Length: 383
Image 1 (tube, rainbow, N blue to C red):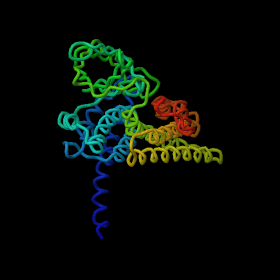
Image 2: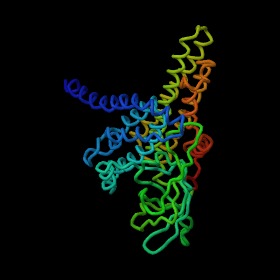
Image 3: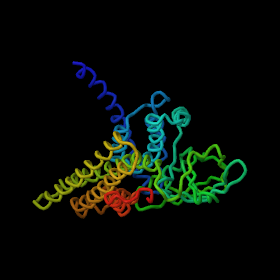
């Protein structure tokens, strides 16, 4: 009886957030098309996400946020991806930067409550350069009295036009320890921070993924959150892999779902034959692969601890999802036929947008190498 009484409450809380995502997504679609056609950033859509509370949804309730579960936030991003690819992808970059410190607060009692409270109270939008930096990082950190001067160019900074805080890194040439990567946050209003409008892309045209240029930006010693050896795996990247990658690829599964539905809608207007049925069935098979692989990634992130084995599971899932959503998009164009080539029907945009799934880390060759190294029991300290 207790389970029967509590289950509806949990389901109601869950459906509220997902229903909100559905409602917002349907409102975002028109602006998404305008952004795609004109290389505009989906600023209004991000503003609505902030106003709705979704931008702070991942912050724990105790710290002023919505306390939404990790799995539900992945579902929110997937729903948004069906309606507005660029909005969803830009929002995923903020979302994972919220969920990483949230994981640390829940699991490590880490002193990140100040940052999370600021996200909740000030509705900060976080900007990430992690995907383009990865293990090597980029840019130079020069030691000066009281801190460092940072000079760098951070590319693919999705959501840059509305971001408040850049979570980034640079390389310090430590005379004793060698090349050392410093991690820190920089306010986007800091002296020396500029956005260079470079984002004219094949797809995801509305993400505002411009270059952020740092010119002698001062970062005090106290603001250095982490120091690590350049090019080597570190706990923080296992954590980022575990938390961020399923969030980002939830978006692409949503885009693939939209492409599948649009292709079927267009195909139903044509005379059917067995070959068309086989293509639709094959497309649905690929979509199922993407969904199953994504669910494995999310489940792994929920129950696991960061480390090589978890990273391997997540990144293998990332490869499978990327392959599958790209196959869905290819088959969707075939299923719809020649009309898919017309921009006004929307399918070619989804085809372009889903191509972004190729480029987030770890790309397939790097993932296969890591998986092979683990299977062959290579010395992990060398990675």
